[in-house]
Image (cartoon, rainbow, N blue to C red; front, side):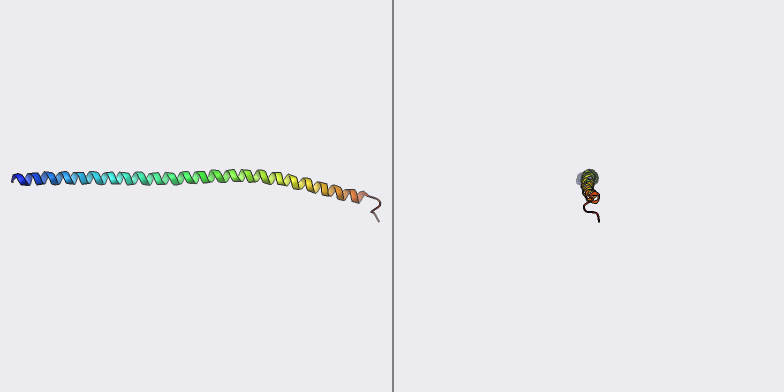
Length: 92
């Protein structure tokens, strides 16, 4: 074997090792990016669920307050009707 063949063989081995390391780095980087994207979507879904629960609570509070207002209005209407019903001048 000549001296030139030895240098070419070592250079080829080094180039192959560098390519393998580069490929391994790219694969690890790709996996890290994929895991990061998955966690971002999970975080976004959790924030959406939290916001949805907050809106449900707020709308529940508003609905309860409106229910109380409607009940009070109905009571005043029935009180007015009861006053008219008790009025002897309006009875036949």
